[in-house]
Length: 228
Picture 1 (cartoon, rainbow, N blue to C red):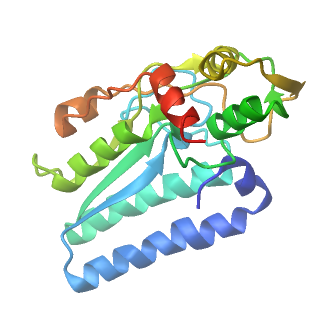
Picture 2: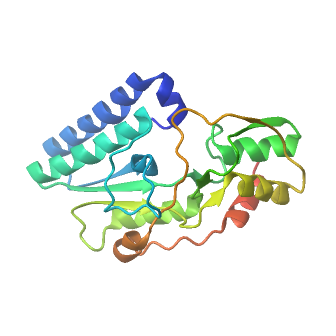
C-alpha cells in the first residue's frame, strides 16, 4: 500500500497490507522453501534525516508517516527472517518513481496533466523541498538485477534513485518546459507527513547490482507527457 498522505488518514490499512501482508509472504516463503524475495521498501524510511545524500548505512530513526513506519517494519522483519531461516531477502528503497502510467496522486502525473489541460493544481509550501525523481525504466533495471542476484546477496537494502534531486520550483519549471505551457497553481501550506528532501547515494547499488540510471528528469518527463 503506497502513499504518504493516505497513510496519515488510514494508518490501519498500512499495518494490514504492508506489515501483516509481508509477514504472510515471509511465512509462506519459509514453509515452501522459496530461496529469495525481492521486496519494495521506500526512501520514506529516511524520514526527517538531515544528512544527504541518504545512504543505506544511515540510522533511520525519524519516520514521518505511517507509510514510512510500515516500510521500516518490513525491513526489520526481513532481517529477522534472514537470521532465523537464512532466507535471501533484498529490499529496494525506491525514490519518487515516475513515468508513463504513473500514479495519479503523485506530482509528475498531477502537474503534467494539469498543465496540459490548463487546469489548476496545488503547490505545497515555498517550493524549496526537493525530490530525487527516478524514471520507471531505471527502477525496473534495478529490480531485475536484484532478482538475478548474480553477486549472491543474502540480506541487504539498496537505494534505487537517480541521485540528482531537484526542488519543487525547479520541477514545475521543467514541467512547463516539457509541455510548452505555463502552470496554473495555488500555493498552500506544507502537507502533514511530507519530508523536506530525498536524495539517494547509489554507490552500493552500483557496486552490487550494476545499477546505473540513464534517464534524465527532462527526458523522462517528455516521455511521460507524450503518453498522457
